[in-house]
Length: 115
Image 1 (cartoon, one colour):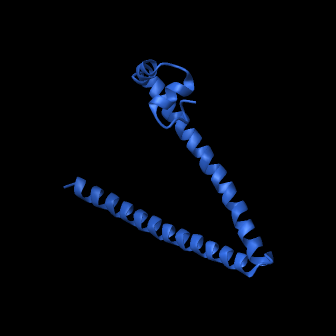
Image 2 (cartoon, one colour):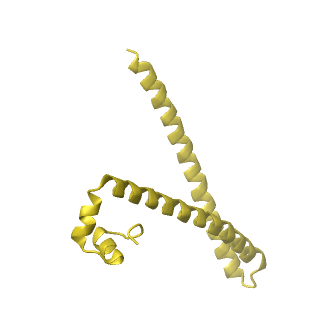
Image 3 (cartoon, rainbow, N blue to C red):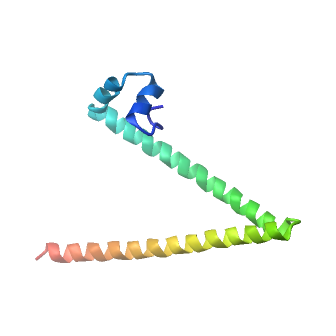
C-alpha cells in the first residue's frame, strides 16, 4: 500500500498507521531503501504491462484499419497509428542525440580530467 501511495499522508491512511509513525519509519535508512526498491520494482512491472498492452493496441489498430465497416473508423485508426509512429520516431531521434551527447561528455571528461 505504501509503495503505490501518491503521498505520505495517503500512505499512512492506506497502511492504517498514524502519519507520525510513517514519518518515523521514513527516517530509517533501511525502510527508505526498501521502499525505493519496491517502487522501482512496481514501476518496472507497470512498464512491462504497458509494453504488452502496446502490442495488443497495435493489433487492434491494424484490425480497425483493415476491417472496420466505417470509413471514419479506419481513418481515425490510421491517424492514430501515424501519430504514434511519428512520436516513436521522434523519441528514437532524441535517444540517439542523448547517446551522442553522453558519449561526447565521456570523451570530454576523459580528456580534461588528465589536464
